Structure formats: structure tokens, C-alpha cells
Length: 180
Length: 174
Image (cartoon, rainbow over all chains, first blue to last red; front, side):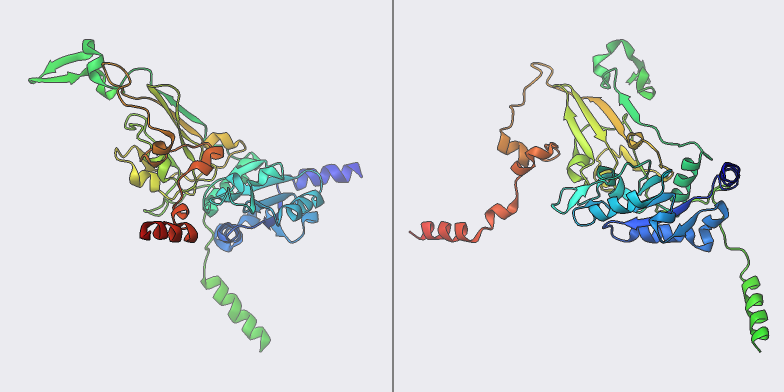
């Protein structure tokens, strides 16, 4: 049994079976996910296959925010998936709650009810972005984004730094202007 | 007959050629009007807060650390890439980039934070009088971004209550 298990793990290392759950989105992300499965962005060549039941799935693709009406059903679908499981939050609704994040019927992002492992922001994300997200999850490519923090260390107004001013063609020029 | 039709179908299928895009190996250029992740240029930003008050998803926050320092925070979780912030920016400090490969395992990776110096009066440092709590709500380019203070945000429905208006007219008539 363990030999067969090992063989299966070796052979089907990168074949993800995805289950597609919409908990109250606008269908935009659904269409993009279906677009990924069409011959144009044929993901079945990577072993990714859409299945109809969460019991067969390795990955849950969540679209739409966690809503008051569908939250429980989404949680039950997640609990029905077999153990090594991933959750992808696709679209800005699933990542952050969407435009209607503060209405009475929306609980917020899906991570309020499920542990989300990968986020694919966009409204809707391009099919390429979804394939990229899956590739990041498989470890084929590295993620490209990192938090950006900019901190101004020096006041950008030239008159506060008279030592950097110089005369050029009868005009006063601030030397560090390009550097700011 | 059915065999013939099958052969015909096969020929049609072969005629279509190969349509699958070689995405992961080579990227296709995005459409010219595609809006991707907004990029904030700190050198151009003046910290007016127009983007914060126009963002429909409320993902751009303005926090004043002190009189001189303002923090512009773009969280980007529920950003719909509508491009309103880039549209309203007077200094063109926000540009909608063509970047769409933003998938991460850590949602904080799409954050952007700018810490800007704000000019103050050279004589006293605070020449402008503090706006009252009601005036602050009406100020353009400035908004409270704490959601618990959301109920203080001025809403036009307050003026449209039927009874109150009727009573007002009655008072005026008297």
C-alpha cells in the first residue's frame, strides 16, 4: 500500500484537481476561471482538472466574499475536501471583501471562514494571472510582488537646503533635483 | 455515412490548427488600455488625499503621524483597478501599470506605503485653524478612514426625511 502511495505521489505530484466555489460573487471571476479551462489557456496540460465535488478536489477556488447566507455552505464544502488542501482566493471580493465589504450581508474576505493559502487579486484577474497564481503555488515560478514602503528622509522643497543651490544660466538650480 | 461524417469532422478539427497560447513560457502583451496594479510615485505625490476620497473600495488611507508627516497607505486587497485614483491625481503620481502577475501567498505583498513630508507655515508651523468635527467631514481631499467613525459621515438622506421637511415648511409658514 505504501509503495503504491509513494508511486502515486511521485506520478501525480503536480496534478491538481480544482473545485470551483462561488459564494456570492458577480460571475466575473467564474468566467475567467472557465476561460482558463478552455483550449486557449489549456491548463489540463499541467494536470489541472475541474471536478464537480469537493470530495475529489485538492484545491478550492473561492470567488466572491464570505456572505451571511453562503458562509456556512462554503465552510462545509471546505471541510468535505480531503486533507492536503489548498484554498485560492480569486478576485478582489475573495481577497478583501469587495466593493460591498461593509454591507449587512457580507461578512468580509473568505479568509474570515477559511484559511486562505494563495491570493490572486484583480477584478476580475486575467486568465494569465490565475495560471500564474497556480504556478506560484506549485513552486514553478517565484512570486513577483513585495510590499513597497517609501519614506522621505529629506524635505523635497529646495529652499530648505541652501547649500545645494547653485547658479546655472542665470537661474537657481537645485542640485539634488533628480535624486529626490 | 457516419464514418464519412467522422472523417469530415476530423478534417475540420485539423483545419483549426493550434489555438493554445504558450502562456507560461512566453507572455503575450496586454491590451493597450489594460489597467493593472496602480503604482504610486513618491517623488510626485503631494499628499492631497484626492485618491483616498475617490477610492470606491476605500483602499487608500491617509494617516497623519504629526503636523509634518503624512502616510499614504495603499492596501490593495479589494482594489478593483478602476483607475479613479490615477484619474483624480493632480500631479499624475499614480499610474495604472500593466502588471497583473500579483498572485501571492501573503496578502500584505501588494501594499504600498508612502511617508511624505507636508509643508507647514514657516512662521508658526500651524497657521491653519483646526476644523471642527463637522467641518472636517465636508473638507475635500480629507476623510476619516476609521470605519467606526463612519456613522458621522454626512449623508444626504438626513435632509430628505419627509416629516422633518414638512414640519420645517410648517414652521416657516407660521
